[in-house]
Length: 162
Length: 97
Image 1 (tube, rainbow over the protein chains, first blue to last red):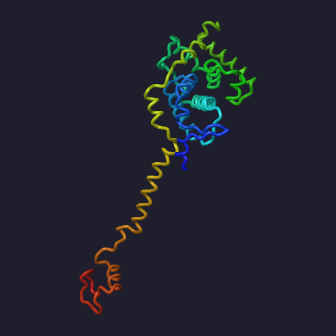
Image 2 (cartoon, each protein chain N blue to C red):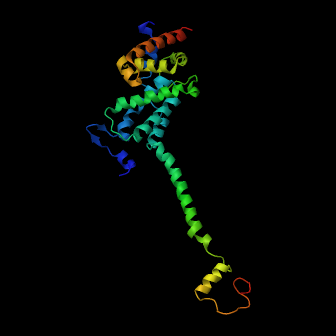
């Protein structure tokens, strides 16, 4: 059986589920929101979701918690994307469905922060993750999460008050 | 920051109903294959083309001897298709044998 055929067959086991498009397709909007919360640019967030979905479907190993696993992929891809110098541009587009009037101002302030600060704020505010969950996701100590979050909030406040 | 008017809370809350654009959704649906397939397909096509050209070089029509060539005369002589003995002018090559 070729990899392509296996990919399209759902094989369950005690260790998890081998992913098919049907597993990840319902999570597309959620993945997009997570990416958008971190990078703040619609086109970039869409590209990240595209890359992550391709990577997820190429993944041959069983996955136990598909949603959490996919979120980890999106968060790490978004963080890596922010670390690239080309993505540090001001986002002025307003995604469909966004209603907050000051969104552009908040995004402009967020874009002044470091990629790590932006990511940790999105995980804490948008994903509502605990310090422990953020620490596991970013593979950093829990104490580092607390200090980075404090620093990120202070940096945002400074930019916001300008 | 006043928690009731925290711009971060309001901003991130405003993203909860955001959806992928129809264009991005269509792109996502059209490309369920991995990058491997996207790279492997043109590479496989080039490999097949190269293999075909290699086959042509060895076994294809380019290796058939031209009419009038010494090789063809040798092959015809070996097959007994040419008259034995001296011939003044070869009708094939135009050269004296």
